[in-house]
Amino acid sequence: MNFDFIGKRKFAYALSCIIIIAGIVSLFVQGLNFGIDFTGGTVFQVQYEDNKEISDLRDELGTMGYDGAQIQQMDNGAFQIKTEFMDQTAQDEFEQQLKDASGSFEVLSTNAVGPSIGQEILLSGILALIVAVVLMVVYITIRFQWRFALAGNIALFHDILVTVSIFSIFQLEVNSNFVAAILTIFGYSINDTIVVFDRIRERLGSVKRDNLAMTVNNAIQSILRRSLFTSLTTLIPILCVFFFGGETSKVFVLALIIGIVSGTYSSIFVASPLWYDMSMKSKKKRF
Image (cartoon, rainbow, N blue to C red; front, side, top):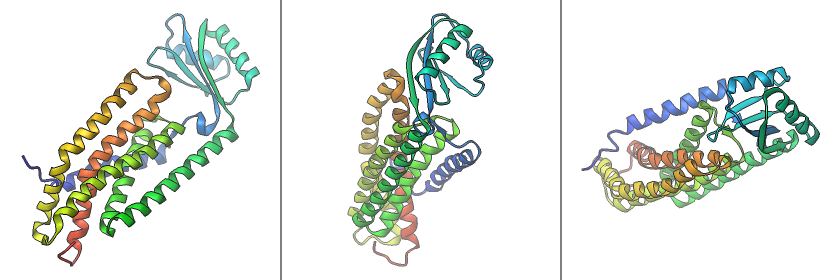
């Protein structure tokens, strides 16, 4: 059964715009939840012997003078406590004060990053993203004619904006693993889009304007099963890592899941329809 991708493109555009606009509003209102990799600070992961309510732990930290500490309960029942940067002596004092205030616990891990190092990591991450964007734009522009290149680049930025928007809306932690995931999404998304574009270009020939929508629909239909199966087989092991892997990998894996789903969606419902709209506005009958 053939699906009219071009005929439904405005619904796809609307869905993408809703997510991205909501993300932009969220970025202005609450920003991104940067981890200590970027902001600097100290993160403790502690496991209590007895059941502990997060509200009780928050009150106990308040009595210690750590009202600004961020607390998150992990899937394994442990608590993650994020404070300002502490050296080793301050960490030992904090752990002893917390035991006196809230009872016995086991320290699973401690991670401290100084503010200056966090700023350096943030700048390096931004630089890596800028270089990747520029190189990808140059490659697509050389590889395809300008309408393909423009549509592909817009779809690429679409995937990045969707991922960033979801992380901002739900205040998911953004750390150096997130940057690595974004760079991975770049490569995955454009690969899927190029496959679709190649199928469209193979079918163009002397296609006239009136038949262009059918040509694009047929091209998408021809790669649909391949694209969906590729994404599915990629997502299965990633989902396994997300549900059964360690806490430290969850940010990276979650960003990959969002990016892969968005990349598959944009290759079919964003990049190709955008190319179609730009082509229809051209006065030429050959593409």
